[in-house]
Amino acid sequence: DAGVIQSPRHEVTEMGQEVTLRCKPISGHNSLFWYRQTMMRGLELLIYFNNNVPIDDSGMPEDRFSAKMPNASFSTLKIQPSEPRDSAVYFCASSFIGAFYYGYTFGSGTRLTVV
Amino acid sequence: QQPVQSPQAVILREGEDAVINCSSSKALYSVHWYRQKHGEAPVFLMILLKGGEQKGHEKISASFNEKKQQSSLYLTASQLSYSGTYFCGTGGGGGADGLTFGKGTHLIIQP
Image (cartoon, rainbow over all chains, first blue to last red; front, side, top):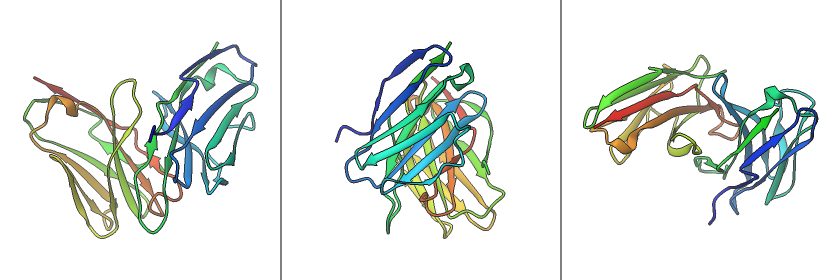
């Protein structure tokens, strides 16, 4: 398996622009998580899905952030409009949650810079 | 609530041992441990569930005391490849509710 695939790897955008981050989880995993990592705040859970359904989005910082998972193999995180304080590394992770518990597999991340 | 990790940083010589602690103010169901190298994604090391379980992974092992709401990661005879930032992640339902990560412990192994 290719692992969790995120795109793009790097994104530089101007303040006010819309940004869309993409994630393809590992086939067979039923849970998907979006995290944001900064030096100041560490790894923050933004939102997670189970069987394509959003379970908890309380970590989404503002209404400017939205996430979708239209099917088991694809998810997006959108920021509109983007602001400089959104600059961070955004990770997508997937796992299988069921009778047994497994660790998360993280994608390589998207480094977002908003100027 | 975010678990608290200690120490924040450790510098060791190759071959020395280290202990990294993780504690939470709320009841824990499970604790995950991850290692992240600079510029890379976190990599899963192990998961511990309720029951005071201790698990091992090469020369890296961990314990979980749910009564004290604490977990510890033990690195024995450290190798240069062990350098990185170690994170504990805690969840109330085995990870089904999304892990909350500590701020990490930076481990530097010197030759």
